[in-house]
Image 1 (cartoon, rainbow, N blue to C red):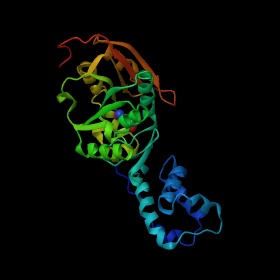
Image 2: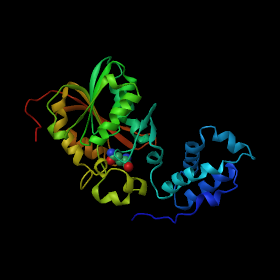
Image 3: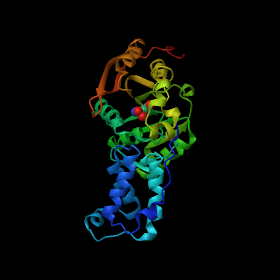
Image 4: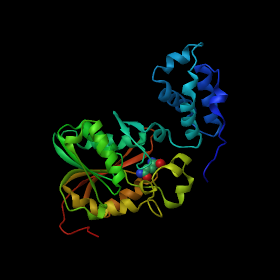
Length: 306
Ligand code: GLN
């Protein structure tokens, strides 16, 4: 169900308010529609309009916004009241040490996914140079964060969405990583065999019938293709467990983000291939299972192509 909050005449309601009163009003309105991080969001929305020094203005009881700026804030607040993600409204999201452009064409990078970067760094700690493949790169977040920490490495990001690839390409340039990245459009199934040192992926892993339970920001505004993991949420892992060996060198590693209840199912799918060693999991900051990694043992020719 799409939420249609009434559209109050916000600039009028805000007339004469100080910055401190204004942020309180925005916070109250966001809370009233059930937004959890209302205070944080209000701060960011005000900063987007009034600049980063809005803090000083809020602390100064006599400071008032120029009335001409209120309509701009009203547009942003109205979008947030309609549960549009803050990242879409601001057009960017911080991930790892990067500031990435995002939109409705890509999954907004989550803090949870930093666990995937930690795992990838752990797997490659003593390897000076190498090549990495990121399957379903979206905004490029995973690939770019990894490469930002591994200056001797180069990487390829694959996505089926050309809009996502255009954004990932811009993000690589903005992160000064364009010389070490390549992006290409492909269905994973059509990728030619290769010998990457490392394969990373944050694939879609929400079970189809759970998509309707996601919060409105995700359900209504984020790309379903990046979320829908099929009937039990494990379709992508079935594909990856059968095919990842096609693109990995012998002894190469992989790390996949998983849903927090999927560690044992994903580990079993991978173990059933008989090609991998060191299958291990790791957790996100909230202590939930978030990553499964492993290593390619022996490269068996002709196996796992279907
Ligand atoms: N963790 C994401 C969410 O819950 C899902 C990401 C994914 O399917 N890869 O919104």
